[in-house]
Length: 439
Image (cartoon, rainbow, N blue to C red):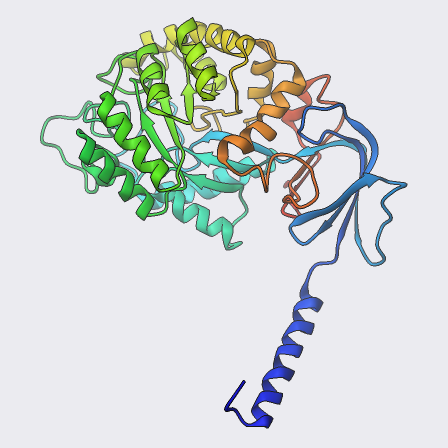
């Protein structure tokens, strides 16, 4: 500290020492976790009588209980009678949304404040279900960015959030919130690139830049029509080749991955050829589309829960008139496409489309994945190692290894034999913090 009097230099050094000592005193003690059965997320066989040492937010060491001594003064978490896995990752969630009982979104009745408050409730339910990280793939006006910030600051309890903000779509496309309203009706903040609507390569680049400017961790596009949107066909392609290349190229140049809502085969193939990172839903996959996805390393995020839910509601007459036929058609096709993609070796990551189904029930997706062809361990890997890879967060998430975040979820019984067990966690740890399950 050249130029400062010695007494000031000494004072600063003393203050720094006091701050260091205070920080050390305030730091949480190490957490020593005794584990009955460990499934580490890599797909290997479970290991018995293990121990995990956590320091701060991250895993310090993993070994057998005999090989890893408990440090003096460490906190204990006894899960010796339970199975411990990595915290789960849901790659397709909408934390600030929830479909009404009549299956209608309410863009003219709800404010962003309503959605933000709803998001705090959904975030807690999701975390308590054992999902410590989610990829939020669509919101209104960036409400999920505020939700992410609140979780990061510790203001609320919730999963770690990576968000796409608003979905990028063509005018009249699946994610155009003004569909089915009379011409000329305007909603503040909707209808232009600010809400993700774009209709040329230049507009599409601008839409990507807008979402990234205001906090998007990734980009989500609507590459085909959808079930719950009016005025579009389920399998109809949306965006031209030039528009797709503009979106994906711009996003990748800005360091963001791109997910595509895509049911129809033509839209899926076009998105894959343009360099998309993941296909969401992937309901109508032919052999060529599956081959293309495998060759390009494109992930499928199947969201089987959403297909089952809209089918059941269509049969019960609960969907809007414009969605009933699409809801009845999509579920059988989703099942077949998932079976074929899995059998062919397409990369698959776990995602639920929660909001179409109630938040906090995410684990039902495991049951459907197993029902339609996966082994229990394959389904677990889809929600751990594979999901982290899709998110580009494998250094921090997805498996239980030293150096990674201490995200743990524990269950009674062995989910490698029965994934129904995954519905009800016995304990959840996120970043070294034991979560109150509210029971």
